[in-house]
Image (cartoon, rainbow, N blue to C red):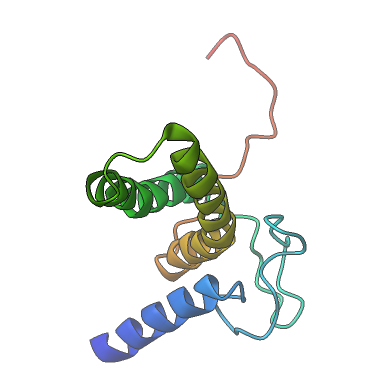
Length: 134
């Protein structure tokens, strides 16, 4: 497989993850709930458990929402001749929540697809107990 094919596979996997689909086949949903990842893909049987996104989706979501909302707040503050605080609360709090709820599953799917595309699986937990002699 040449470099172009790998690049196409990478971007295809990311697009599938963004849409909440299996990064390998794109046929089945990646999530069984809002953010609950399936243990495996029902279509291609890809094991999804090793690809854990952990806190990365929340971090990226906060980062993106902040970079959208804060400039808008500053523009409204400047051009709106310093509107009252209740106006900001009524406008920006719902917008922030809606943006976060819309972006979080998409970003989580993309992070899982990124981990899959780069074959970065979480280490398996050790099955042995604590050995104080080692």
